[in-house]
Image (cartoon, rainbow, N blue to C red; front, top):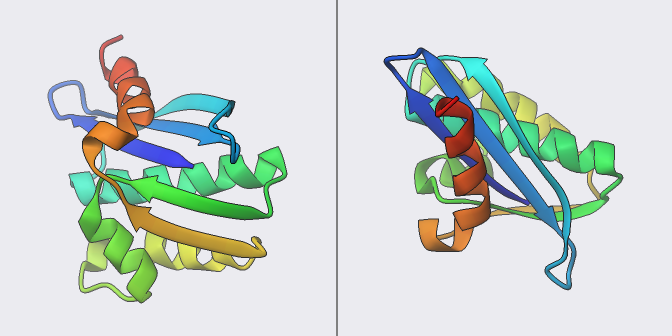
Amino acid sequence: INVDATVDVEKQVAGLGVVIRDDKDNCIVAAIISYRIFTNVAMAEAAAIKWGMQVALKTGLVSALLESDCLEVVQIVNNRCSSMVEISWMISEILEMNNSFQNFRAQHTATINNSAAHALRFKICKR
């Protein structure tokens, strides 16, 4: 699961992109969604992770490797704690969703490796 988010402050919208591939790198699902603006980029990135997990569960995945180019939020998800009060409720929901997977892991990836989700989330703010 590759996820990414962007925030367009002027338009007051956040765009989230999700791309799910199988173990052979075939695309299973690609999706975008927009939200009214979040308070910061970390909030939007956490929302992208949560939404990516929701899409994966609806697709029927039981094991998943989630990749995001937002190191800060990936570390919060993996360490299961956050000093960022404004996203702590969303992190709690992400951690609760972890229980729905038999195997789940989140990892940081470079933006260049996250290009499909990056391109998708950008389209929503350019409408």
